Image (tube, rainbow, N blue to C red; front, side, top):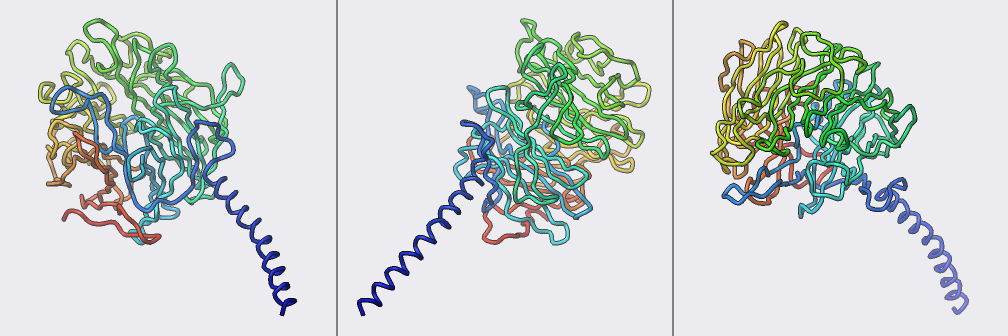
Length: 497
């Protein structure tokens, strides 16, 4: 009996010793999955883990001493207009891949989230938490890109230079489960240096050409210098081409057409009567047909970059002398491969009726001149929607209708249509109605599928709240992403007939 007990104790001891390395190995695997070895202290944290639902980030900027509380605020999962794209449809796998600014259940940090919509089943998986950016600033929201082989890239932007930026790449094509950090470099004076900071990133991938990126540098010569760079492989990037550095700098939006890449932008004056980054005015456009080697205005006039004078050949419309602010929204190219710019003008930066009207406008290059037309008005400078040009039909999906928090960003989403190239518009359908929060930042996916036609979030305009994510079909049916998931794949909930 004693021998049998002794034998059992020895066997148990050996078993425990064998189990300890397995437990330790699992702990090491978990640690490596959460903290990437290339990340330094105070960097973002790479998780590659699954969240149990879709939660967008709530964010506010610049408190105001009035009933509207903030310059802008709300659900900012698809913020901002100067980040693009947030979603891409790939017919090879019949899925729309997308990213968004997510958060934990306490809205205490910004998560860079990636997922996809399976058009064959109408379902979405649990989203992947790729990176904890360790900030609550939605200016650090990610954007997404996909190369020819199907590898998914996540560009993690930064609001200025106080935080690092990253590029992450999926370990497998068309797979969102795991991403690795790209040790990216750019050229400076012909030598590769780390590419670890960029703001307001817009990245477009073209077969054979690789990546074309428009972005902002918070370094000289302007507070916000808009730039351009390219890369064949997403790892080794060209020198930064400075596009414009007029006065205090710019906000830009960009797009890619057939053999053309273009940027539309405003500028920040530095005069005493129009001082600071809250004043932004004028409308400019320029483009390149040779991947950034040379640049010209819409009429073909060659431009020497960076632009540094207010009056130049890229000027589309002078709003400076009209005392109007200009807020950039979207660009699309028409059937003739000519740019159409979507933007809002207003009388000032503060939320509230005193700066009405907020006028939605398009500027279309006809081949010989810029044709500018009004669409409608809404009640906040930071109402944001997207422009669609398909087979001669123009559509605007945007929060143009008054929401539950009037004069705060967003509202109710509506679909507007023009059949005469923007000369006249009619409201075809209101997509949301009688919600508790404002809806905002309706984004157009790249190569948009009719089932995943617009993508946005909601949130309270005057106080911190949860934020839910939505899509609209081409016909205007709206679906909400699941806030809580108890299974790996779930359907979206239809929220309006």
